[in-house]
Image 1 (tube, rainbow, N blue to C red):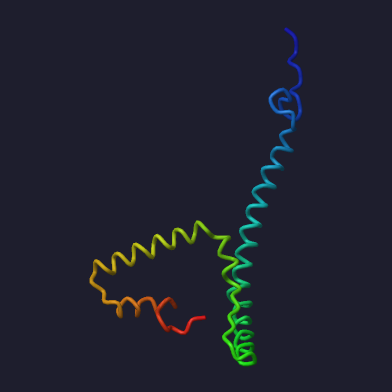
Image 2 (cartoon, rainbow, N blue to C red):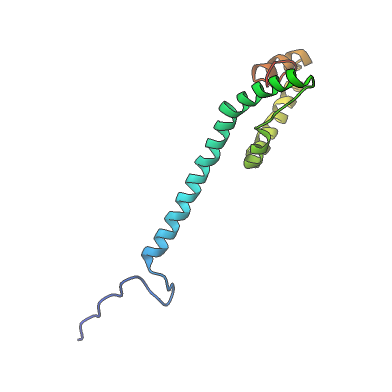
Length: 127
């Protein structure tokens, strides 16, 4: 009997012409990119909510005083496009909660009190 030939290094080139290591690196790079972009978007949201929007509120107040007309600066709305699916889930949850509140017999003022706890009520002072 003849000795077996040495196995080919780098995988079966007939099935996939790229070496196995390169395929692994491509998959790892894709996963890393997805991970980094997720954190990048979250960092953008934190920056806008906790740093830029408070500064924008101060600038708007100053501009309103100097110009004599109401000025609003919104740094949050442009970021909302990043999380369309999350907003859809939030809307579904809100609609369900409103339906449960109606079934439970909450009055509009009781519902407003609950909404005020999360800065969604009328005249809650949220910016």
